[in-house]
Image (cartoon, rainbow, N blue to C red; front, side, top):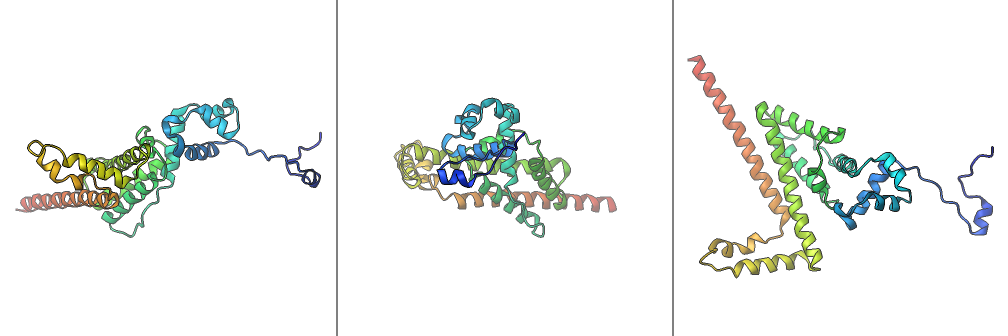
Length: 250
């Protein structure tokens, strides 16, 4: 049997014809295509048939690699996690946590609905588990008590996810209204300032700050408050331990 020709011949080139090369379908190709589609469609607009059409394959071929949308979300979350860089291990535990949170936020910002994808799935894949292991190890080596470590790790993760989803919500609202974020912030500031001062004196006074879109500064401020709280808790626990040790020695 003749071998199937996969390269374009010189005769075909001369005739102006081309034979497209077949790119094998696999999970990585599917995930890459969906990540490209997210910006326009959003996760709610993603349908398996749409993905198949975008890839130029039959739906049955797609289901051979990904059984349903739930599995697709897990694959997307794993890919997003793989793009989150780990910080330099030589840094202090505080700075490593800070850098990790910044890297996590930066990666989530690259993909529409990334926060929703992460929250809608359970971490059970290698790259996602590697990030949990990193956080647990870092907090353990810093000296935090074992029962508190999962809570502390969850606080950092939840802060990043919640912040990014709020950013996304406001950005989407601005896009739907076809105005920029500065105009949207000004609009809400004026609304708050017009509230009855006898009922909402503090909201009216703080309106200009409430609707600020200095998100980088706000994120880093909140992160510093969180990490300073961690450090204070660690020092408190260390002091209590020394106090108990002194009592025992007496």
